[in-house]
Image (cartoon, rainbow, N blue to C red; front, top):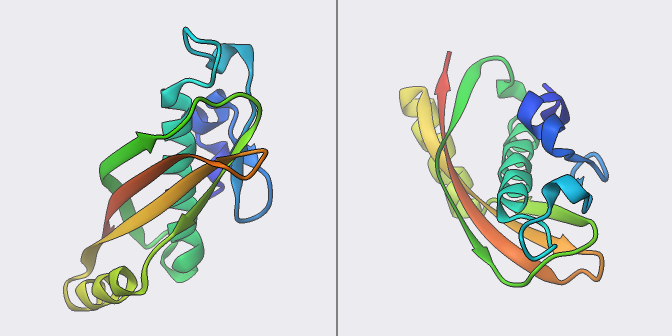
Length: 136
């Protein structure tokens, strides 16, 4: 599955900056009452990047599992204008915990952290997304 083909992600205008990094442009439809990118658009970008990260970490599981977002939180650091991109990471402890849970029970959780950056490479927001992943 391509993340950018999910109807809501497509509607918001999220695209691929590279194969590993998603981006969103500052358009009139995505602005808030201050004229900057809406927090909901930034959240959608970060959540989508966290899903892409999991797909890239576990390509063999595609089509064999149902991933569901269990919990997500964002901390917004500065107002955003212009285009932004997101980068995700999973710490080694989280990966090992998930692999053990999944091998033993056929399901598990994994926490993905995401940084949303502007054109000047400044972090504008940080998110944490916990996914529940279960075999079909």
